[in-house]
Length: 431
Image 1: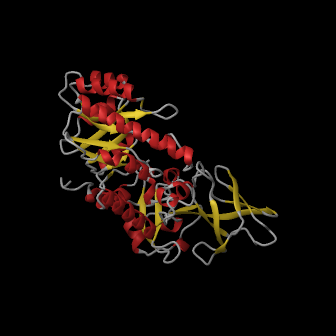
Image 2: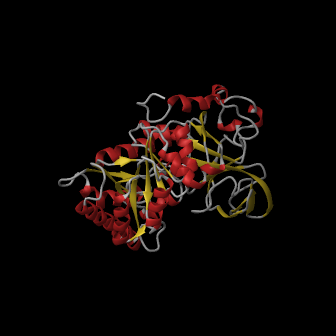
Image 3: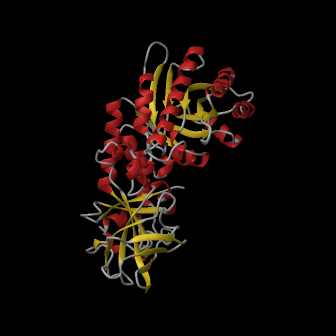
């Protein structure tokens, strides 16, 4: 890999040589045995595919990626998108090419995927406690940066014991949590104790403060926003205490928080810390991951642009399902279920219906997905105003891209779902 590359262009381009077959449920049987590049060269359209199906929208993905990149540049903050949303090096490339600092990941297996594709700047939004993972990170080449988080004295001890006798030094951030949250030291005093232990370690260097506000709220009402902002204010206090005690082991500090729901609040509360006063350089880094795909559900309602009355990010994914049974008035059974579509942050939303995939469709007003099984969805509708027949195709709006991508190893990308439905790319995932 060229050391100037943020990700290996050669490794990503090599995906075009992958052969498509029965292992890829989005690939039609007629294309079995073709390569990725050969499939695209054939100029397939949505009509050539089969249900159940998940598709992406190229225009939406590009627009969303451009928008957050510009927002970060305008606000002077770094972006390290959470790659676990898509686990797609092709989409990571789009984010990195737009100026992202690097890619955030959730566990050791995901780090290995990223390194296989040559990603050089990585953040593990988690603690290293597996000795195999600790040793692997310590053995990475000098041109690779891997930041990880620590929230307890126990984790400091595990790393110290694993690297005992070694000169390896891991760059870490002390993670602040809160009662009722997920990981993270519970309060400033506990986090300071961890930071002091990191500072005293031969194998650790404290380079920042990390946290995740999204585990403390799930709404954008006053109570939810108050919880988020209060937590972020505590993060700022911890950072100021670390500066006062001289516990940072670097002249370049990172403060990182911010998923796809509250990144504006992160910047509002923590941006005063950026390069304020004397001391080390301070950068603020957000980790939004779902924004590039967005949705027609949870993020549509909670993301900052929606809350501020602005035009939200554009939904970049859709489900397509066929009616396989219609034996009761007002009830249709579709051929897509939990194994195909996300359901944890809201059930799929029926939007359009038509007699064929890729053909003309009409609005499906008043229809609702009431439940999903492993391979089926239950759709209710007003039989007096809507005609639904076996073989009809329903387009579904989806909620939560993080639990959509993991169900598909290959995902077709349409030029424009509402216009040119040519398949312009195939996204490979590595969960």
